[in-house]
Image 1 (cartoon, rainbow, N blue to C red):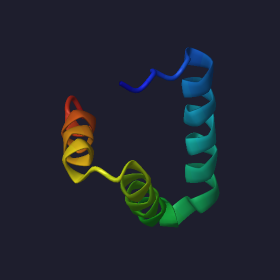
Image 2: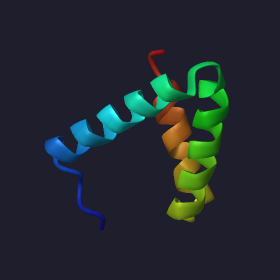
Image 3: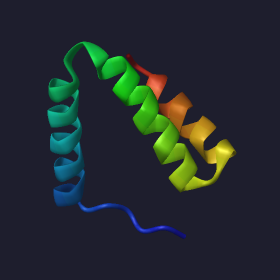
Image 4: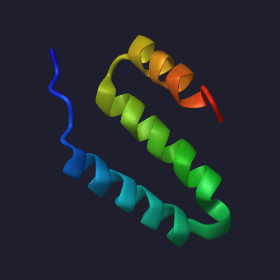
Length: 60
């Protein structure tokens, strides 16, 4: 079982993501797709990635 990230680590990830989105400007959508593909590859679990996508689209 994997361990949950600390609040501090989640805040760091959030801040880094926000900074990267700001830096990419008009290419932010392409950046997010590229990041998602890299994360999926690192996760190495297509079913888990599908579940994360479902979770992310809720309440948008």
